[in-house]
Each structure stands twice: as C-alpha cells, then as structure tokens.
Image (cartoon, rainbow, N blue to C red; front, side, top):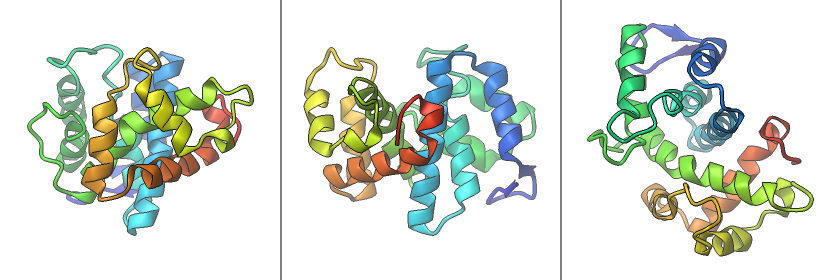
Length: 195
C-alpha cells in the first residue's frame, strides 16, 4: 500500500494493476508498464525515495494510451479518469509530467526519473528481444547506442527523450542505460525476456 505524498488516500499495487488492465489490453503496452514500473522502483531505491509510490507512477503512466493514443488525449484522458476515481492530485501531476507537452514541469525526482526511464525501458526491452538469447544480460550500452542510430528499429521510441532524460537526471547516458537494464532483470520473465 502506498500513502501518496500529499494525501492519506492509500493506493495498492493491485488497485493500480486493476486500473491498468481495465484500460489496457495490448500485451506490448502491459509489458511496457511493467518495465517502467521496475525501472522506477530501482530509481526510487537509488534515490532513497518511496519505492512503492514510484512503482505505481511507472505502472500507470500510460494506462490511457491504448484508448487515447494522440498527443491531444494522452495523458490528459488518464488524468481525468484518475481524478474522477479520487486518486491523489500528486499522482496525477507526476504522471502528466512524463509528456513533454503536458505543461507539467519535471521539477521533482520522481518526475525526472519517470521521463528518464520511460522511452529507455521500452527501447532496452526491444534490443533484448532481438538478441538470439532474449537476455538482458546480453544488452550493453554500446549495443543500445548502436540501435538508437537505426531509425527503423523501434521507430516509435523517441531517441531525443532518452538522451534528455539522462541529462535531466544528471547521469552519463551509458551509466543510465546500464542501470535501467539491470533494473529490468527482476521483471524479465514478465517482459518475455531472460535476466
């Protein structure tokens, strides 16, 4: 259970998962949510922050995307749903912040981390999936950087966001790739990968 930073409203991981699966049916989008959750939990541990809360932010950040995939709708439709269901405004704002066009500043550690791991988590997963072993252990920063140059590979992933995310966290891109890759290993089976 998570007591969010600005309210006594308790949110469980099960409640967040139920909301996600109510609005998201695509296995790829569900795997993405799990990857971002794992990366956010690792970021929280490293920062000494609330791991459960950061994980829920990661799990729910794209819950509305399947039904509202345009920049005009996502993540605004999700924010409306969260508010209607009584989710805390802090969570709503943290989720909104991952969209560069939302107008919500990335001025807190959780917001910077979400932006930094979102696109990268998906990209690392894609890199691992094309490896013969499908193992995260075979993903190196150099292989991720090489694939980033191939615009046809995982073309939906915004490469600029990957670089900007690491810069906003104040970490070297290779270090960030390594850290996020490691953070995905506990969730490898759920992601269709090997650790």
